[in-house]
Image 1 (cartoon, each protein chain N blue to C red):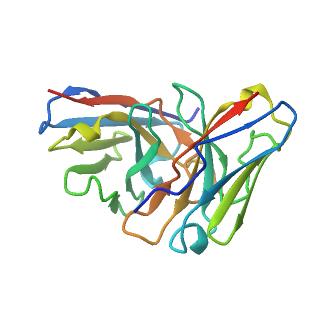
Image 2 (cartoon, one colour; image 1 turned 90 degrees about the vertical axis):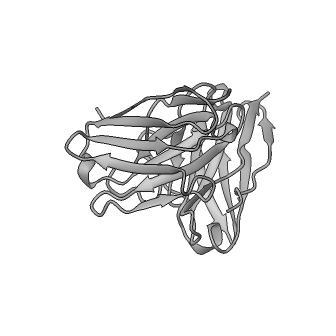
Length: 111
Length: 121
């Protein structure tokens, strides 16, 4: 099971919007609405930001939103803030022998 | 407060064994699916293993199948990861994770702080 493909880095200025893509296959992203996104600051545990493609857990800012089209999922951060600078990982449920797969990760830089 | 606390990490030689523990509190552990996720130094997250709550079925990444074994003791609210035949590439921070919020499916909303495993001679 190969990792889902994400861009290595994305950057934006404060207040701008950025979008991170996550590309998989019909066995994972394309086959299920079970895409989740995680934010990880250096030295910290990951934090769930989005689940089931476009749902936010309680306490997560509405500046974070998710979507999916075909085999590609996306995370959009609007009104970019300094605190959003972190690594972001997508995850999908899969029909393969390994039931979950993470993306390669994207480093978000706030300019 | 929902909490996961890993322990048991350390330095081990290639081919050696180690057992990680994850103590859970603040939620109904016995019915909760539990997971292990690892992160090699400077690398991304890798899903390693999972175990069902009610049925105790286990699932593994192909990279660890046959060498790592996940188990649970519901009487102690503790998750375990028995690691055998360790390789250099198993060096990572190991996190335990679960979902404790009703309505969240196929995602992990609670994470421990992680425990470092270093495989080196």
